Amino acid sequence: MTDPDPPPAIDTLLAAVARSDREAFTRLYDLVAPRVYGLVRRVLRDAGHAEDVAQEVMVEVWRAAARFDPARGSATGWILTIAHRRAVDRVRSEQAAADRTVRVGAASVDTAYDVVADEAATRQEVRDVRRCLDALTDLQREAITLAYYQGRSYPQVAELLGAPVPTVKTRMRDGLIRLRDCLSTAVTA
Image 1 (cartoon, rainbow, N blue to C red):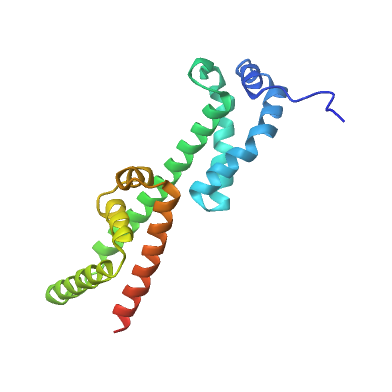
Image 2: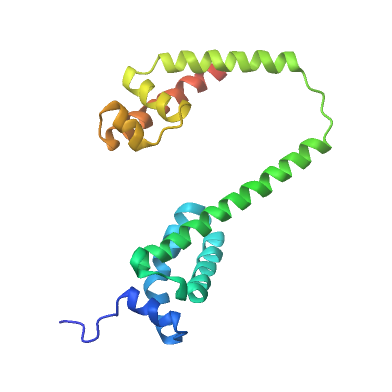
């Protein structure tokens, strides 16, 4: 059985929203809001914040629909780009607030600090990390070093190693598990 009235394209709905068509916005909302929420939820990992940001995104879509340029991409892409940017902005905002709280807390507490003990602990941690990295396979160590010490992305690591991205991810996951286990035994030793 075919649907007698298929939903209009999102691009068409967005064009109508740009002309302040409330009915078109309702239909657009029903079509894209679940995807917007899903994207935002993956970035934020907090349902409450994700709901707030998804709502902000849809309000921005209503207000800024006239600025959409179909020559630059699809309406769905435009909306999801807004959603991603808003979600990342929220993460940065939350992180900045947490950093401020830590700075204020650290500045207001006058704790005795043993520089020598801290340096000794740091040196021991460096030795432990090096020892545990040496215990990895060459492939795991190389992938982890490229990603974590040189700041490379999975695709960049894969290209440098001449391996598929899923293989690199598996190597890194297995290597990180081994590092975690090795370092946890170093802490208890």
